[in-house]
Length: 343
Image (cartoon, rainbow, N blue to C red):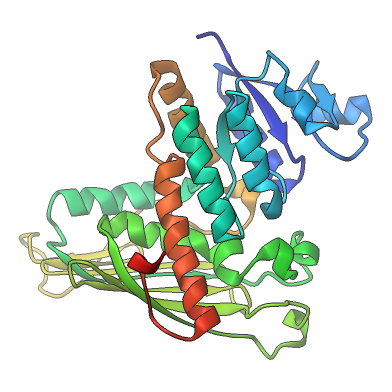
């Protein structure tokens, strides 16, 4: 395979973050973009590359033989239908989170993806940051023993000062605190635990601050998660935080714990008992998508395409995270615990 040729749909803020990664990869070329907006040729090429073709009809872009992969960066509500069309046209897909705002639509896409045979990746890019690599290394080496309690929390203030605020406040566009933002934390919790969920119970609340009153849904939710092996977890999603951005990780195991960049383990000799060890690593530190680590995930996906295999964070893997998210949404809507067997 020669260069991987990318077609981007949705030319907003997140596509700019992806472009930085595409431009850094010598085996990737953005050949086409699709947008409802009218663009001056000079501005379009300055952002997406010389000679890039502009489509205003998505279906037309999918017929372009110079597009191997569709990068879906559009509004949340469009992701499912656009991914279905891409898969039906034999295009590999890269999908921004959340994949869907509706569980029925998610299952509809699942059926298409299973039949299509196309390769995929979903942007849970935090799985590729050094901090997550560190935690996985500790788990594999048994430094934490068996995990019995996990906390992964997302704290961010997405108010009028934030670019996505105008559409994010709408239930039909943002979906919920968890779907629009905190799903990164939920995915991390499931990634670290690596076992099946049995049941979820969730609660939510809305900030009293005037700046968050335009939201059509509760701006903070908390989910309690019970795994089939009996271990438990907690995932908070807060988009009304009046504080600096924080992606909080606290994992407790039979032999040790991780609390963000601090580690304590009984399996480390010569360390003061019960003391935390500060480990220098790159954590998730910003909600600014231009600072997100897309490059390692895109590098991984390109390599997978070259080798004819699927991504480690493909649609099927991300589907599991979203399925748990929709169980949490069901718990919030119905005010009760929800078993995954119901989904």
